[in-house]
Image 1 (tube, rainbow over the protein chains, first blue to last red):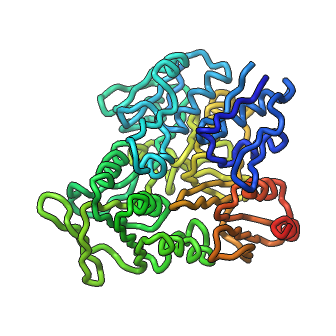
Image 2 (cartoon, each protein chain N blue to C red):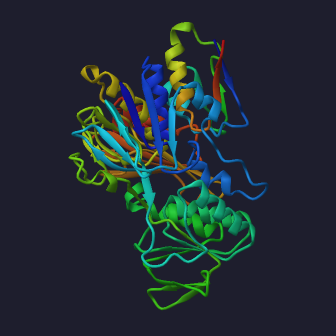
Image 3 (tube, each protein chain N blue to C red):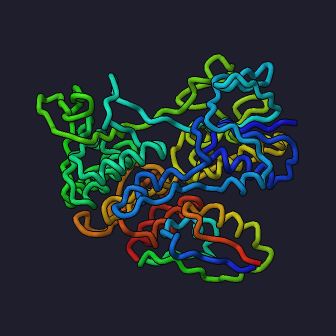
Length: 63
Length: 393
């Protein structure tokens, strides 16, 4: 599983970080960093929650 | 079995998606008052109004994607009645939809000023409203915004991005008090002057006048403002008229328990739902993107499996784009104390709200890297001292 960020859509609203702070972090400069783009399979439900939580639809999961 | 979701915006869409994800394979019907496929509302007062090429409608899903969910759409046909005894939803076109499970997600509708609606006067709630406002701004109009809340402030921002003159009127002595509290409201209001928007507080609108379309706004102090575009942003009311007589409890929204249950087989989600939020131990009705999305999914899951229904709890979160600034708020503004870290006249600051010994809320200007850390602290019940230490670090 790979987390894909579409930077053209991301506006750093931070919901992904709120769901999974170990994988996503918005920096002080307002840029989102995917700390771990390939989280382990046991985190799939959490990653799906993070994708669904994004108000701008900037995240997706690739297998 | 038939599962009916009334309301085809974010909460309703998330409800039908969650029902399928939970393994429900029966008949699924999504009813919407507007003729459009579900679309995203926050951009309508933000990027959708930006100068430049008209953007596409921010649809959440394509027709193909909705077809893939095997959901029957009833768009452009608002629900007009609910018979909880017969378990039927009545639509404007006369259809009666039987249901075993029902999610009510009819949202909120923009308030209007009393009297006739002249052309050139708009609320901003739907994509049709947003197109009209955008077209007027593009034609270089003089804009008067009635109501200095978030929508009104975002419209003012869109006018100033075109270097157009704009006046924002607020009936209260200070705007946004309910949203951010008395102490922080002036700091937010001050952003308007910084960007060339005139804000007038404590003044009402007596009349909107014009010959065939709006030409001027008459104020309660007798002044008259010329205007080609008037945007009314004075809040929204939950859409519950159609539920009168249904037997459901209505009180500024559909009253639900902590699992979003409103009645036998009936759940509610989004702007229309007033539910008990266990995070703060109080009844709330939110008009926020994140809670609408989450409640839609939670209501559908609970409707399908009531005996294992989970409470829905959340720390409220909203954001607003003003000029070049981003305001973000997490938690609640009701507090025993508000502490500001940073310079309120500067480019970035955060205000922390204390309730007892705990952090209850945080409002930030241009600190996107911090706001979710405060949200996490509120979720885990962090102490006030912990929050102050983090803010000072």
